[in-house]
Length: 605
Image (cartoon, rainbow, N blue to C red; front, side):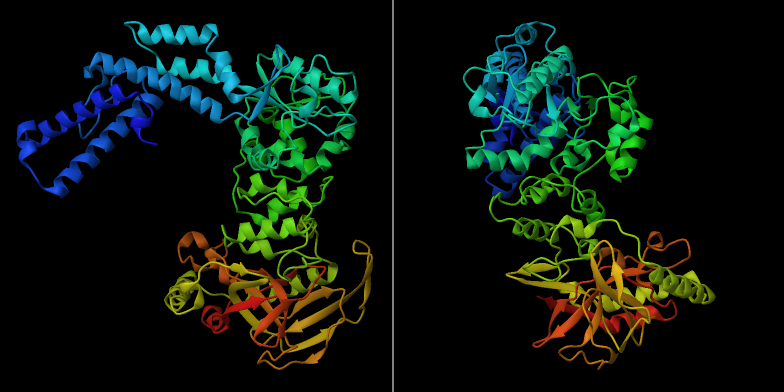
């Protein structure tokens, strides 16, 4: 947004004239001479420099200082501006601060003093009748001017809001219940009592505005529901305080906290990660002592964070400093693997903010919502852990999971550990110095330009077919383990264990509910043949020193999780469902050059 839209027209014109004069002085051209110049390129350059200087002045003056701003290129000080223009400039900044504060708020909030629900415009009107606004307006008109840091603090404090995180219960009030009469005149119910006590506590903590997902969203409006769902993570992130109400925790014991249903719900995942400041409360609305009574923010209490990490399986750094994005996909999916939502679509919608993606909200599509979530993630990342799952694939494509449950943390079986130990011993006997590996990686980078990853670096899905890049290793022979099949207590079925042999790889273990064809296989990958696929990852193309592990191994030579495929007619593939991850340990010796013989772009159905 340009500066002209932020200020009144008179202030903008005065500021622009001033910058024009200073710029011409700097390059030795008088204003009269400028009129004689007809060079279009010079005029365009002059305009661009003026806009650049104005924007720089605005940003520095608004965001960082309350005194004069010195520009390296223009040498302009705010104190030398025309007083009338500068006064209007200050008034524009005040309104801009109000607009920014409004933009950070939810669509509706509850006034904790009156109990009435308000939209952002009503909040602004309320602010402009307050003593705080009167003080700021008088400061603009005073000779001393307006201290920007004080102004921002006053505006942000006034527009600050508290949010409720909770498990929905019985008879929760909805928007239609409070839109006309507020929360004070509602008929008593467990949900109403919870809402009233939340607002009372928020007011006690100094917040004029509060938000609850039960009554601050008009769920009868499809457009508002869509906007609220995709914005909810941001609202929790912008909140000044999030109050977590644990209705099933009645004492301070750690055991009772661990059993709370709050840790099992899908929507509460983002309500834990997004807020910067969180406080926990028991069923009677007293603070939870195990979450740090001595700390205003429970995320500042090391003991509380450690306990939350142990309960949720989420690393402490994610709890205290979480940043959304399409990275560490498998780990982030695993956080929701054992969580539940009332509607099947919500297990996907509650992850939108976690991965910083957006998809249309369409209740009734059921499991297809998770397919669309994965498709949105594919567009933003090459992280191969998106395909590192076990269990049932989705109905749309065999390479995509059916739910976050497929990404749950699960330890490999004893047979896999035994194979890993054997391979690790053989690998430790082979030594190769770091310089040779760097040479091989440089060769890898040279050949990389000839491969499909150079022209098509990203995976993408079209219809029900997924195009994915990586390395395809044909299976030469398949042998079933002697003690197979065995009973799998988690999947509640018998599973088969197979040894898969390849020419260029050590044998791998595959565990599946399916009965696979054993014996020798043709290496040309005829229809019905098996292959192990390694999806492409950006770190595989990194030849810098930081890419190597402590043992001097490049990511290409490090163990990876592969996907078992069956070839289909027409050069297409289908992933075979497994109940354990397929862990592959590449050989270290002369592996990089051999790897490029298997570079492949495949189509998976």
